[in-house]
Image 1 (cartoon, rainbow over the protein chains, first blue to last red):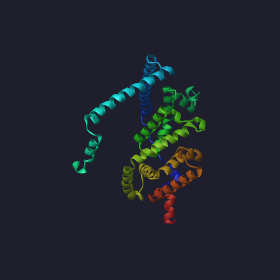
Image 2 (image 1 turned 90 degrees about the horizontal axis):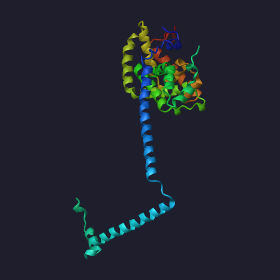
Image 3 (image 1 turned 135 degrees about the vertical axis):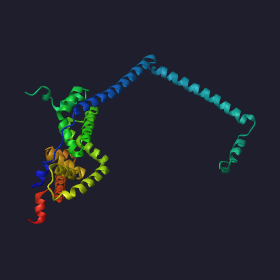
Image 4 (image 1 turned 180 degrees about the vertical axis):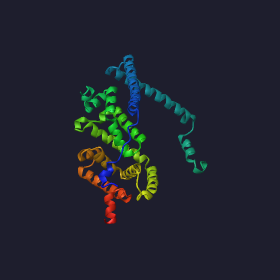
Amino acid sequence: MNNDLDTLLNKRKVPDMPEGMNARIIAEAARTEQTRGSAQHKLSLGCVFTRLFDDIFPTPQPAWAAAAAVIVLALGFVIGDMVDIGLVDLSATNGDELSSFMSVEDSFSVQEWV
Amino acid sequence: MASNTDQISDEELVRRISESDHGAFAQLVERHSKLFFSAAYRMVSNPEEAEDVVQDAYIKLWQRPEAFDPSKGVKFTTWFYRVVTNLAIDQTRKRKPQVKSEVLDVMADKAPLADEQLSESDEQAMLEDAIQRLPERQKAALNLCFYEGLSNKEAAEILDVGVKALESLLMRAKKSLKDDLGAQGLLEEDKKRKTGS
């Protein structure tokens, strides 16, 4: 029988540290290091490719950039216009009124979907 | 004579770990693993789980050594106790329902023994169970102050509470244990008080 709580608490035992625990922790860290190393490797490869890309396609000077932007804009207008003409051919230029398309759309009823 | 490696402070070893120095990590593991294994075991009461907790704590340190900031004036061991304690609490939460049922079984088994002569291992088991039944913060406070020998201030820092709150946790832990162990006939003073002798 124990006289007081502290005497009893002092009887509490802790088992010995499992054999090889330190080695397992160190090995696990080494494995984690490989993962971390691999991530760093991938990152550095990414940097190399970015640098290579920059070497092949150097960043244009502002004048070049402005010219390129104008060309892209003009190209966009031309393509847009061509597409627009194509749309007119399909609808209004075939003799049908645009309203006829709308009336077709207006005749749509929910029952058709049910 | 102290070896050269013993002279390197924990804080310096952590700094080297941040430079991926595997030797420094191994040294820090060798230096403190026994201490932290005991601390983890006292929280989870299972050697395999305690090892997992210590390993997780060290791996976290290896992966993010910058999480320890010595400029805040905290010792490495104090900070690492906190990591280990929190991981141990997480571990016990994961398996709480199972522990409760185990504890009930143990209580049922031990109750008839109260008036009999208890073997030392029975006494150990009952003490361990009583401690494990404590709420986790009370248990952590008891472990840190009573078993790890930390000051109330250090234990309060680890548990992220004020010193007064820590003292209250400790007081409640001891009272619960006294009631619990006394009821099981493990404390003489409690038995005397009950019998009025």
